[in-house]
Length: 487
Image (cartoon, rainbow, N blue to C red; front, side, top):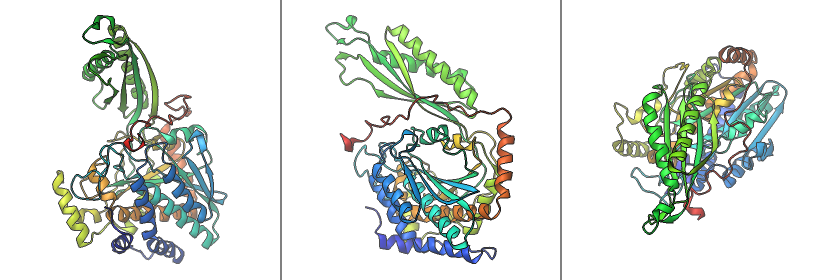
């Protein structure tokens, strides 16, 4: 069971705001208002945690976030870029246009109670193992706080929030970029749940994912197997060839796959089978090249097993283009806000859950630390559709300690902490940091000009955005079989 609202309010109240003398009265007021509303935002986040809706099916989650924005005075446009759960919320007018991102999709098979032991609420059901319930809610909280500051100070500018569905494999942001929805934006500030507080200028891995569908001929596996042609043989032959190919790709390459349809009965030669591939690399041209080799493996496997194969590109993300100008703004304000301090109850929870993985020298107190500022020009440990945005708009991101120190993303431990009061504490660190950072850009629009100059320098001359998914429509049903609650 998750924590009650009353307990969450008490716990969040211990996350102090380190208000430096440089903050104006209006800035201090918006931070105080955020703190006063932290219990409400915790409730919103935990409601989305309970729902745990998969990509492109986040109907209740997106509506709840939109409701917060409408009630705060934002104009909300829904169903943008061909995605029913995507939206754009806007307040204010004129330049600069500062944007936030909000994700809200869960991951399949990650159901977990808010407990320090492995305990699925519903076996194989989705769970928020990447903290997107906090991501979306924290960004909404920041957008509303900036709106309050714009209104109170009469400042010029536009605050915008993009509700971006299906980050976990569906790449909702890619379709929004392709539709030109970011063309007038001057800066994007975003964040992601984490086990530490940091705001460096980092990169990521470019990615292409695709489903390969083999078709064969069904037959009785004992009475007439020679009359059949196994689609599963095609999948397995493809996997064998790709695994041999690993010896002959560059060290930074990552290739993963899952057999998503391997037949239902061993006494039938399967006529259909499917395997879902992901290819990653720090450089976009290289990820394209490696993917083309994977396609050749699929075609060779089909030829050798006398089956047929077709493939569907599901998603493709650019690597994130770091922007040090904006990142330093975020880092400065993160240090103003400070990290997360646990209550005795939270410390006990953290100490117990840290026994379930190798935490090294980390302790529960590590959640209060702010990591040193770093610039990572190339590579990273993961991929994100934020990458496409970062090549067309100056973009900076931060992480906040919504998980117990040492927790890895996409784990049951991340789901568990996100369902307690620990998750919302980190969420409010992010909300306050992003609020102050946007205010700083509104007060000093020359910073966005400098950030744009850095973007142009980093991406080079003659750049034209072309998405890695081509002209395909959003894959709205790519997770349709992944939630047992819908069967």
